[in-house]
Amino acid sequence: MKITRAAAEAIKAHGAEGFPYEICGLLVGRPGDGLISDARRLTNIEQEQPRVRYEVDAMEDMRLRKEIYKTDLDVLGYYHSHPDHPAWASPTDAGRAWETYVYVIVSVSGGMPGDMNAFVAEKNGGPMKHIELEVV
Figure 1 (cartoon, rainbow, N blue to C red):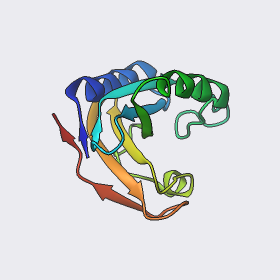
Figure 2 (figure 1 turned 120 degrees about the horizontal axis):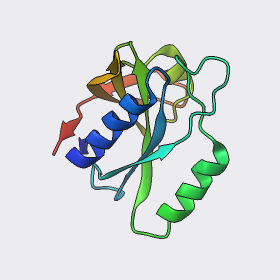
Figure 3 (figure 1 turned 120 degrees about the vertical axis):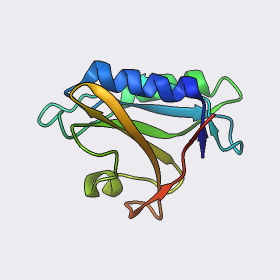
């Protein structure tokens, strides 16, 4: 999977701004291209453990999808951050994953974004498989 430098930088900036809480958003691109061309922010509405969990606002998600679907783009997956933890899919991440989407995780340590990794679910609910993410 490839990601534009602008989309990768947008994810990292969102992670830094949201620190010490997890942030989340949509990964957008043209279906079949294997390229994430845009990252669209969503609000993390998780109330109990926002430092280690995220929950997408369903209404906001649908509103953004309606905008995206008016173009030749589509939702390719989701991104989120791991504050002060590695950019590696957790059991919780895997349990919530759908096999058709790409999941990008960025590590944010002390407010500074670091590693970014991509994963796909082998089936709905995981397990997750690490895939190469090339910044172009």
